[in-house]
Image 1 (cartoon, rainbow, N blue to C red):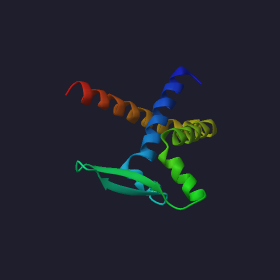
Image 2: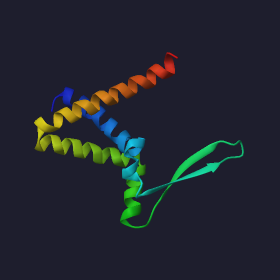
Image 3: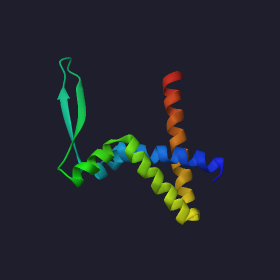
Image 4: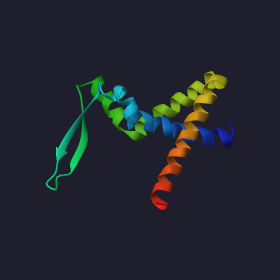
Length: 115
């Protein structure tokens, strides 16, 4: 593995993990395991938190999907394993996720420091 591969995997894993844990487009993956609960505090602010549905394996998967670090390990293992098995087929996915991850990080810096 080269340094370029390592950097691509880092950004790709970052983006895939955020996609699964936070993005609305993948809410259908989390829905069977999470229940979103909204509470209004004394100041009128709405706070949203999640509760795990079910017990046993269902609750365990819910915990996994709510933990950025845990999901990140599995996303990285998936990407790396897929790349080992079929590098030519998986590299475009890794590059796309890496570019999207870099773009997301750039957007955070631009929105915080330039505006």
